Length: 221
Image 1 (cartoon, rainbow, N blue to C red):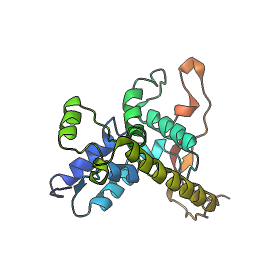
Image 2: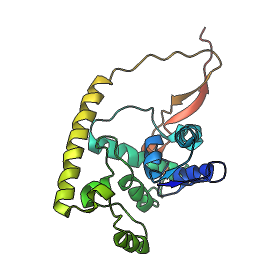
Image 3: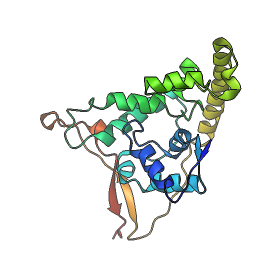
């Protein structure tokens, strides 16, 4: 783990980790997973504040809720990531799929507790061939505690962990389905759902539209 000077590099690292195309505006847990090999004082707070303050995420991401089905979470993540790259015209919805695929495969899945790429192949993803070769020489393709194990033993340990984590996630999801009440006051800025319809003539798909719009609470007479 490398320690950084928070005053100089911390904010830049957080911004790069969140806004990079291969990150696809992931959440706080995903950002901390990406930065797991770095540390500086106040790192978690900086990541939390930056992600919460991202205007793009506020408009394109649905309210937080626990998804207990792996495929369901993958689809919602992919759609949210596509929204972040689109403007009003949706004809080029597939232009950034390679970057989105990298982002989804290289971030921790909340239902399994592991990175999808690591779960399947037993080692971390590298976007550069030279980095992969160097990691192999340094024996850092995976966590050091697993580096000495054979691939079949490594994958067996990963699958055992993923199976347990997924079972726990399903149980937690069942307990958290009931929504908690929220209170607002007049004049408060909130985000409301954006109800729109697809329009083929304008190349507009409601699935890729902004999920939320800024609004103010007014008094109802």
